[in-house]
Length: 232
Image (cartoon, rainbow, N blue to C red; front, side, top):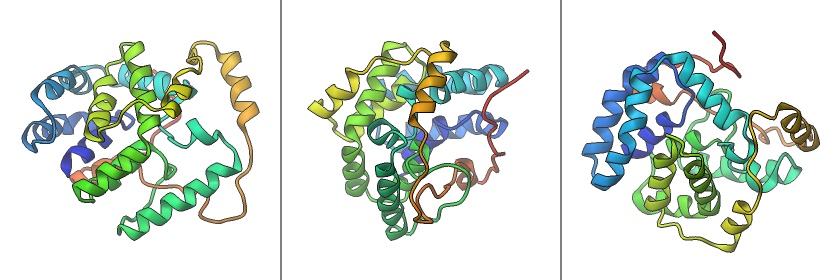
């Protein structure tokens, strides 16, 4: 399902290749038929921004949201396991799911990175994709609500995923939403959070195995490796 591949690209770090691909992504979202018209309309501001805005501004916005705000991290297991060893075991299980689905992983990102998961879902059938979305439903719902609170231009992507997964509010989602949102401008507080979270994964060689961020390669466009922060 190409809609999941399109969402994977939209949630990836902005690059010139992504900007060039936006017309194709927009056409895919409009034509495949998974989204309602109002969901497509809600995505138009993000599509327009990614295509037309200054690339450095787009990259800075992305880093501020998803790299410097732990409560908005796109690494899904971080929201329930932090950096604990339990996350390593969950990574191994997810890698097994990818391999069973014939999905090859290459690149720098972790298996639980949402764009990677969405790329995998694009290779699966509707029922399997919906079931996996539902498994991560409490995390996706929390991300959706947090982005909506910030009036983020990315919020409609998560809202659409919540709708596609037919995800409802659960006690697990409410527990995540009860956590105080990070302030990405408070660098001292963020440093303290990351220092407390650091731990080394177990000896399994697959734990923490890097996976693909080259989402656009499957659209026949190479994507360069992402730096950790944007600079002018």
